[in-house]
Amino acid sequence: MKRFLILCITISLISTTAYGWGRREHAAVAKIAENHLTPKAKEMLHKYMHRRSLVYYASYADDYQPLYIDLGWEPSNYKRMAMFPHTFNLDKNNKPLRDIRYGDKYEKNCLYFIDTWSKELKKNHKKMNDSVRLTRLALIVHAVGDMHSPVHMRFHDDKSIGVYKVIYNGKKRDYHGLWDSGLVGAVNPGSYTDLAEVLDRSSEAEIAEIVKGDVYDWGEDVANTALRLRKYKANDVISPSQFKHDYLDEGELLIRKAGYRLAKVLNDIFE
Image 1 (cartoon, rainbow, N blue to C red):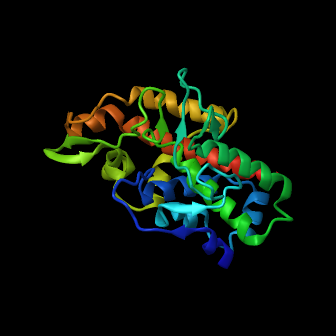
Image 2: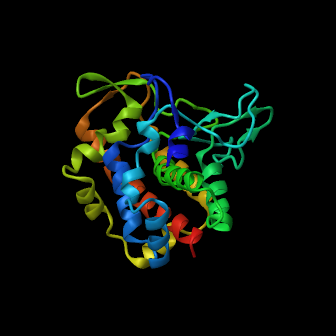
């Protein structure tokens, strides 16, 4: 556990940091996933995560944001450390990049680490150092939530991830922040368990359809949804009622999909 904390070296928080969903939304994703774990996955996660719920780790990366994790590669800044990526990049065809290297530079790509770490865990979880294994699992739990936020992909023609000001309900607000907890959270009062109960209503057939493909297919699905949610730009005036009317259903569906897909990733690791 000590090494888990050492791996997360915190530095001063900065106001421009972009989060993905609020704490309650991340917790709801984790709770929905727990509802759909196989018995074996539940058993192994209970053991490896020190008998704690997935929810316990749902916002760990945000609590230590910006945090630095040893990702096992060496960027040009000479250190084998890099900020844990909460976003992913898209090419000009809106397809997610499948690597952290694009041309002559490194790209932030949480999809790459979800994919890479889940494969590492599937192959070697029994032999892994306890703290490294816990770190990988905790960050997968968080990153699958992050990748489903509609302001967490960097489009080929717009890498802003919604970090700009709009006029919301007569006040200046960061547009990215409206998605973190200003939409789904404001409309669905109550705890994360309440939110999970409200959203976890898909049939087995619907869930099977949602979890088809791999993490990059899911990233493309989220990106296609996000394309429909790019209506508001910097300095636009947004009515809360119109914002809810336009986007609430999509926002709730993204959280639901994140929960089912997180369960899929974890079940596959321990199948």
